Image 1 (cartoon, rainbow, N blue to C red):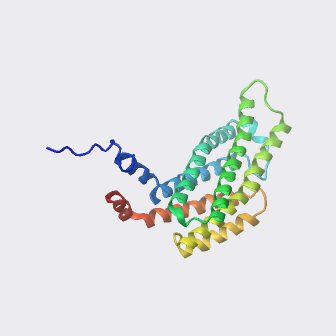
Image 2 (image 1 turned 135 degrees about the vertical axis):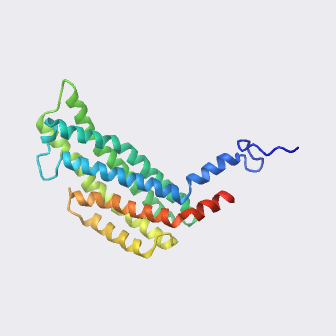
Image 3 (image 1 turned 90 degrees about the vertical axis):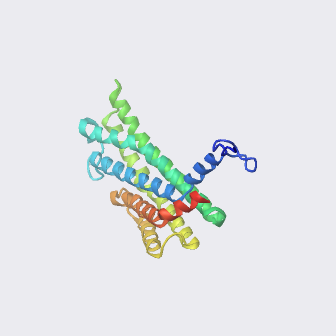
Length: 238
């Protein structure tokens, strides 16, 4: 009696096991991009709300250091930042995998570069505040002037420079989606409008920083809805 092939045994033709190939294909599906985008959007919105509550842009940038509640909010926000960054990188990778050979080299370079710089700005902004928290917990805490300076620096990194890179990312993804037909017309209009607002928004604008993850959330939900159960079934049966 012939035994069925072991899913973990590498195929002679491809050198990869059917199980590994199935998992790799699942990680490249539109559903994976949609889930990663939703995770990033929800996490970064929570981060921005917590940071804004702890360090209002129109208030004293050093008042939070002496308030345990605000420090707790800031600590919670910084805990979420790495996971938001990882989800965003996954979102970028899956979208690039879906574009495949249709990806234009010029737009691909700008798309990848702006996304990576945004993540770098996000991590740098969080690291500045994290350093102040570490100093506050130790014997040599930062002075009020230092707290005020580095808090403002953190805000500027994300709300001035970071959102400009987010604007470029939004513009390029919307344009790629238009050229490849993977983004519907209404979402193209939203994407172009969001990119314009992010480019022209005044520095240190809270709602502008939140606008970018809201756009990613819309795009991710659209990806999940358009993927549907039929594509998932189809990919598993081929």
